Every structure is written in C-alpha cells, then in structure tokens.
Length: 356
Image (cartoon, rainbow, N blue to C red):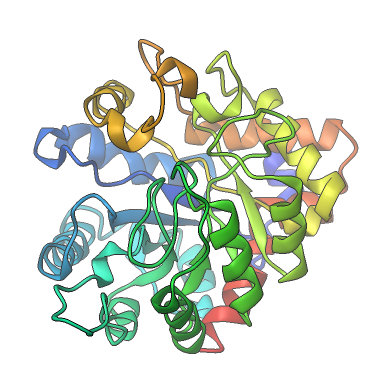
C-alpha cells in the first residue's frame, strides 16, 4: 500500500477498499493454473484491499447442480488455502472485523441469472425463485441479470434485440430486494437495466462497467443508465479490463480515472466505485474470448468489439494506489476518494443486506 493511500485511509476502521468483481472462475476451469489462482487474494490484501467479490457462476451453461458444486468448492478452497488471509463474510460488521484482523473479506457473485434456471414443464416458471435465499445464505451477495446475451430474465448488452425484463425477471428483482441480494446491471441490455432500476426498491450496482461517453463499447453504459443508477442510490464500479477501457486495450490509472471523472461529473462521486474485473490469467482469458466468440462478439467480428488483441490486458490490483494518487492530484477530496474506493459500496450493501 502506498503512502498516499495510507494517508487517505488514515487507519480509519470505516475506510474500506473494495473490488466488486474478480473474474474468479473461468469457463475453462480445468485449465486454470492453481498456482496463479493462489496468489491472487494475498496480492489483493497486500495492495490495500479489504473486500473482494468473486465470480463463482453465471450464464455459461450453469444449472442448479453445478452452481451448488462450485459454491461448495470455493467455500472449501477459501477455508483450506487462505485461512489466515481471507474470510467469507455474511454481514457488514464482518467486513470491519476482517479489516481489524488483517484479513480480506470475501463474498461471491453470479455473472448472469442462469444459476436460478430450471427445466420447466408447460406453464411453469423458467426459474426457481426460492433459490435466491439459498444462494444468498451460501455467500452470493450480488447477481448480474444477464451476461451479454438473452436469458430467461433479461436481455444482455450484446443481444440483437433490446427487450426489457421478462415477467420472471421482474419477480427475480423483487425477490432479490426482499432477500438482500444486490441487483447487478453490468453486462445487461439497456432496456432491461432501466426496467430493473425502475422495479428495484433498493440501490443497484453496475459491478464492472465503464462509461460509453468515454469509450463507445457495447459493454459500457449510457448517460441515461448512469443517471438512473444514481437515482436508485446505486454505484457504478469502474472496470480495469483493457478492451472496455479504451481502443488501445491499455488500462492505465489515467485511463480508468477518465471513466471515474465522467461518471462522477454526471451522477456525483458518491455513485462511483471500483470493480476491476481482474483476470489473473490474461492469456487464458484471451483464449476463452476467442473460443467463445458467440458470447463476446455475437454480431460482427472480434475486432468490432475490440477483442482482437493478442492479450487482453487487465489492471493489476496494485494499481489501486495509483488510482488513489491520480484522484488526489485531480482535486478530489479525501472523503470523495474514500467513497470511490469503497465507502459508496458500503452504502449500497447496507441498504440491501440489512433490508434482507
């Protein structure tokens, strides 16, 4: 942790540094290098983070059975591999307790709502709404509505149509509100996100999205979406994955702060957070994107979506200090910086988790 970051945090117990999205599990899970994986969470802790949310499942062919298995596996992994550095938390007070103990607080999230999907008969629901509470109790504290393409709840941001939430998607948002699971609009289509933000009675997240006004990419979000998120009391967590940061695939602190500036100027700094979408094996991630081009670039070529690079770069967790320094040099006050680094997400979590 840099001296500037320490100065900003001032050893304040309530100052928490968040990353709302680590790309934890790959579609090519069997090819993940376990040694690379084991280094990630200790690196985050050393860099100054206090909380991370890990992808454990999503829209890539998940059903209930594999999702439960992955959750069980990752819970065991944390207990066995990182008992001294990480703790799976279930409340806000647990986050602050983890910080006092010098540990990294961890929760899980889904990138898409297919983990709720069942095989219905005629006239039956496409998903089991009762699973929201079960997954929440197993550590899943936020959920994207869709991942790029259409599912049973919502359209994705790369779907050819732009339909809104399905009837079941509306029910899902309401149940997530009831339980306390945060509605996450990243990767989701424009109309579906606007519907979700209208239906939700709790603040929402865009856990790893950037501003379309800075870089016009289908994964980035419009001014309308930014304003609507702010109106819910929510947070847009700026992303450090190169292809959606800029055309150069170069996620420097300056480049990422351009997105922070844009969102802060439009919706207010209290509605900005951090969701780096860190990929600890960028070569594997690049291979995955090219192998599953139908999911990442469904209409057009990989070049059309800025996914043609030899390696798709990802901002490293250690860059959080440089982000803080850049914000300070650009005139952000320390209170605003503490909010962007994590305080704003604390507010969203409190509004959702304590309501559930």
